[in-house]
Image: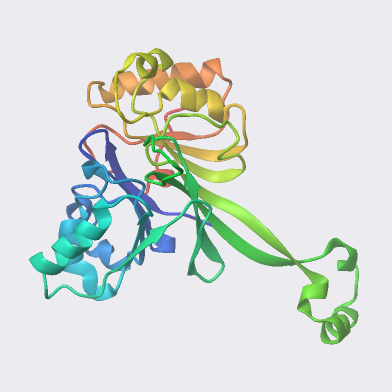
Length: 289
């Protein structure tokens, strides 16, 4: 499936990614509506990874302009900022009705359109107690039916008769493909979490592993070095990197990507979002490598 992905992601300032063919938005930081403009009307389902302001403040203007399209906003079930936001929007823009807010749990799957679903994956960005879920990554799945191998040599008339006698479930098997994964903000913990993703969108706030180890911080992030090492140990078709800290220049980031591509012998196309700029149709651009 071809995916047209637009996005903006600079750490501390704003992050959002829109997958046009699927009508899915991941996170909703500032600049969402000015970056997408009328394309916002195509957004049907919004999946927020966590309650940091740079991932959700774009909802304010979006809700005011586009609630008429009845979008659904999904958020980690124990992140209590979202019910407050819902109430605030109701008071601030009482005329803007139609948006649905839904808390979701880890491993919960949401059907967003025919054959397409989104699975919530717990991550380690926000440290919680007692199993509370305040931060999520997401996987997008495409489900298709295909003929079971043992029936591929049947003549069309034989196959039709068998389906009439036994039913479709007897001759068809379900094939699920992870067409896209979105990390949200999270450290690299499980090298196989995004294995077999067609497209992986992953944060890379810092350039080196040493920087993540020395930062005194409440919430944890990834480094480019760790992400590239993870990618080298799993099967991914295309990689999009974002959420870089503005302490770096884009040219510095690109040089580090090229260095790590060589170090870890990465053969897949690697794209990155520039600091402070919106990227349109990311996968149709030129990869860094």
